[in-house]
Amino acid sequence: MTQSFTDPGDVVLAGQNPFMMLFSGDGPPSSIVSFWRVHFSPAGTGHALYVRSELTGGEPRIYADNVPLARYIQSEIYANNARPFGFFAALGIPVTDAVFAQSGDPRSALTETIRTAVDTIELTWSDFLPAFKGATAANASEGRGHGHYALYIPARHARLAIDGKVAGGEPRPAKRDGRDNSSAGLAWSETWVRPH
Image (cartoon, rainbow, N blue to C red; front, side, top):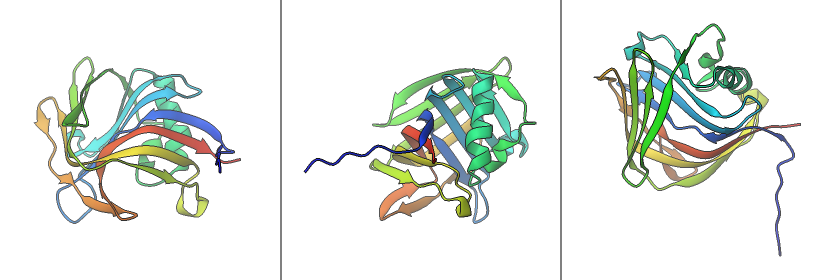
């Protein structure tokens, strides 16, 4: 028997969305990072990085090579999906122009390097767990305005560095439907869908 599946919602964005939440203790994350390499959106393609860390003085920062795309992610994704990155939705956060480059691969380590006129930011994920496909349905009562699908590649280790200074903390291990997971990892082939 052939099974076919077409999501009835509207695709609003697709691409890569590696992330990291680093913890220095039992409290909230000391660093939180959301990186985007977007292949499809109404605002075009490009890259955006959203980061808040002790290295940024606890303030959120945004870096992008397509400012309308960075603002679109804020207004479409973060504003309608409160956890855990919802604070990045504030449109008053300035966007800094940046150049983005990727190196490595998930067989060993993957690094995203972001360069501005004054800063160099390095994000590295390594010591990967087995990949799995995951999906999350939209649920307004839980603050999720979209559903999304992705290939998740959890990382046991993650590193955030800004101008050579390394953020403290480590990813926190977790489980997702019985699969080993982490608070840091790659989310590739990520597709966000707005329900009708």
